[in-house]
Image (cartoon, rainbow, N blue to C red; front, side):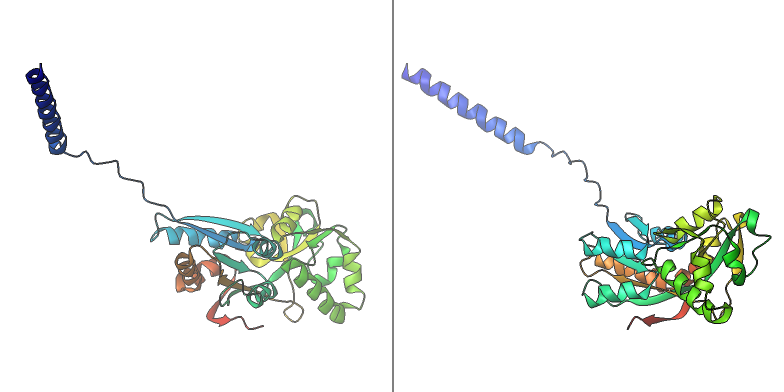
Length: 277
């Protein structure tokens, strides 16, 4: 009995060794390659930058095929608040230097740069365009829509009305505000209401007219009265993709970036300026 038991034990050991040898000699099957990790760049920008930044995203993709860009376009005060409340952001671009200055002073962004200017204009609903040709005639509009005071275009609008009161009568601002029917949270909402005929007139940026300018009349504001908007951009200190963020800023400041801005109706800075105020 004992010899049979030994034979069985030796047979089991031999079979185990054979199986182990076979397993080790099998060609290893290559695992399916893991898909490449896709980077994501998050850009918070003033609503008026939508078309220009959209075009720049196409340029960026030529050298960053695996990078997806998530844009958040809104009023500068709105995107600033979201950043301050903890939103994950890589790049911040504002239509008003004061918002960028506040973020810089709070240590939330790296060095900021002014990269473009924008000219406010009066837009007039098509059916009213034949009767409103100058800023002086703005109080004749029965329904006027402007940006809220905390929105860059709203702040610029009030400054323009104050300056106009010196040239067009001390009560000019009051006569205009008497016909204001709404104050919007971003410039695109102002334009939309005039296009839809919900307002007779409003004040927006000239860049907003690159698309759909045939749907409204346009009145240029005299240079001595107008207030030019300054746009600034910075990498966010807590950005999870700082290298990509810096590459995006470099594109905006490049010759190609300035060309895109000019086509979109902005006055691109020939020499960029560091935000100091």
